[in-house]
Image 1 (cartoon, rainbow, N blue to C red):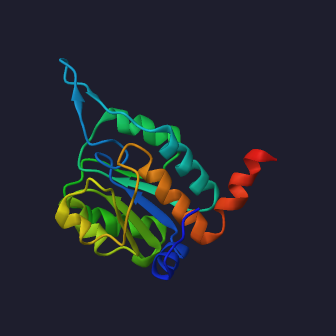
Image 2 (cartoon, rainbow, N blue to C red):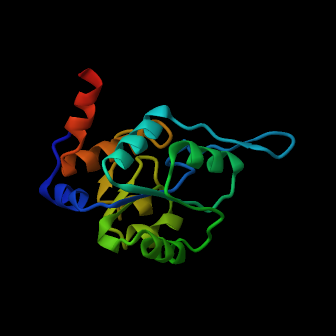
Length: 178
């Protein structure tokens, strides 16, 4: 478990909705395109299980992404992600709509991003997170920068952080060794 600063602890304690970007966060940011135009993305199982554990602890999950890849829609269904906004060019407007649909205030949201297109949400939410490979300008607005890379466990790290702050991580983990 991490040693959380008091500011980070307070921010994570009130999170009711975790919002994710996809490319560079749930994936390593690379996009493979087959000759037939099909996009292929790689997702990390640690992230998927972390999202399941976070949801079981009562935190809603969402994706706001600028792209519309069928593989992401499949992964959203597999993980039971509550809200999925795809092909979004104005993340600020989608974020406002999402908060209303989810019944949460901005300070109750965490967002994980990696590029400047994520800043309209990052500067408004209660816990702004960036992956280490994020654009330098984006990193300046993050309350927390993950140790793990996008597509390599960064989302799991954020799930664990939120669960630790909310006191749900240790009980959830202990269930696996009962």
